[in-house]
Image (tube, rainbow over all chains, first blue to last red; front, side):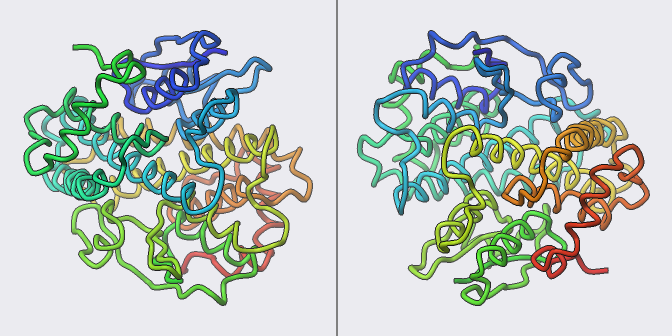
Amino acid sequence: MKLRINRASPFARKARIVAREAGISNRIEEVETTVSPVVANEALAQDNPLIKIPALVTDTGETLYDSRVICEYLDTLHSGLRLFPEAGPQRFAALRRQALTDGMLDAAVLCRYELAVRPEATRWPDWIAGQKRKIFGGLAALETEVSSWADEFNVGQIGAACVCGYLDFRFADWHWRSGHPHLAAWNERITRRPSVADTTPPA
Amino acid sequence: MKLRINRASPFARKARIVAREAGISNRIEEVETTVSPVVANEALAQDNPLIKIPALVTDTGETLYDSRVICEYLDTLHSGLRLFPEAGPQRFAALRRQALTDGMLDAAVLCRYELAVRPEATRWPDWIAGQKRKIFGGLAALETEVSSWADEFNVGQIGAACVCGYLDFRFADWHWRSGHPHLAAWNERITRRPSVADTTPPA
């Protein structure tokens, strides 16, 4: 399989962590792919009309996206513990947490585009504030939830690890740990997990 | 159950269509909820830290989001034909198509915010062009795919109906039907389906 990724992308990281947790990363060729919201990568557009990563080309030549679909697909290719619980309240708790962390990442990526890609004269502080509010609302929710996680590490926690890593990577000056000591302690522990350590964004 | 919606929201519409297709809309109270990317709705923030709709409060008092999670949950509450195929290639084809149409809707909502919410002096034409490219890339993909759909109407087609409806609602001047005759013909047929007709955005 071919997985289009970028080492800076938190959504690609979700898929890379799942591949490692599932023990199938040796079946996947990770292809570094450059993306921009304003300059289309034409090769990527062939695989994914949304011109986003991650995008997975399976062994039968089909392309899957986005990160949620890829992660769920990769989770069917191994016989270990399910990263997507199969049914019932546990499944929907994990899916809801994945949606929370995906939403936080969407907001963070929009902040990144606003602050690093958009011409300075066209930036809008209210937009940043609105997106940041979503991220910090999410951090508050995770801070409450994390005490019940114990050793659970499914797609919900994988999302949380990618949020913490992305905030460290792009928004260190937001000091997300402040006010979220339990989440910070969990993240400290989880960054030592091989699948997480192996997919840390570049320095 | 309580479903926070807005009749203008294409993501809320997905959940409303699923509820109707599943025959359980009588169990759901739809609560009109105003959202803005820059002015937080504090009542909504209590239910969903991302301050987005749809958000579902279940009969046991848990809150689920986003639209994908709500739709999959509602699909477990009936015994009719599954709107999320249960496993295998059919499931991933439907999930991939849902991701495509969700991505198109994300791009369209970002265009809407750029053109109708962001102060005029801070608009960035390259951003609109980049998002529009994703939408039209998606339309081209749907135009190719639609010929194989026959009477299939799962979460993938539900997403496509919401895309067509949202483009008509907000971006009629983009004339999406031009160049996509098969998708336009399919949409013409599907807008007469009760679940779709009953959830048309306001005039």
